[in-house]
Length: 386
Image (cartoon, rainbow, N blue to C red; front, side):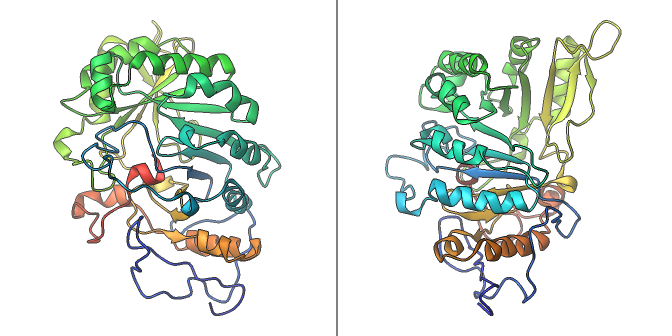
């Protein structure tokens, strides 16, 4: 550390390793970056969205995220003491909000496995944006525990949920989650969330060619007119354990074409800057958007990069900051928090990290090696959330 107010932020070679990618050096120059809400990176992208992983554990073994052959009974999860406490998470989140974050999404693993997560939600719900507004506070879940927790989550201050659901056919769903969990229980969780007022609800379906593409139309039919937004996600090359191959990617354009042939669609404007999903509304007889029928979304991170306006940062379960879902290195914020650095110092460190951000992996994918062109294994999605 060159001065008291210029803390060192250590790059990590791997999400589960304390090894250094390069010799440790002071990240920030002597100048301090204040939190003004106007922070932007090298490409002019603001910081608006923070995704916080609260656990590295999950009770599903979906092969595109936590395949059973890797995450088996002998897999070593993070010890409890390595996890950020709720107070530490809230403190870091407060710094990000001061830099302009308006939306926080809690992820995992499966975030509802984190004991007493309602207490964290209460703390985060009390934060206010630089404009004085409540945060857009949401959570992504596999839905397995949602039926029993939905009302408590809403009471704690959670606004809405996104549920991962990769098919309606029970055999397909059990096969994809690889723990024989029934689809009926997830559907019951979705209804419980709706009844509790956790909405608008979104459903994420990862489409893997040769596995569940035949579930696209049944899913579209089921959720049309329900008030729930169904989003189709291209199978992504996240991490190094899911055995990703390009020939298993079904392009979003094909998904839209398939649905449009039976249920006519009309393209809609993005809902907000940095939106990951391309929106398509169900059309009425005149070809206009039928709002009562609702809409779908497609997330095309493989075939149609959206790096240009990406405004998301990701905080891992043990306090590592990642600037891209496909990142190979993170920055250790936990060490700063536990070294009792001031909020001003923490905010300055975050400011320097974001100002130096150059990440645009999806735009560069075709020219990179399978490991992202770095020779370093990329972070696993189960560690920093989707």
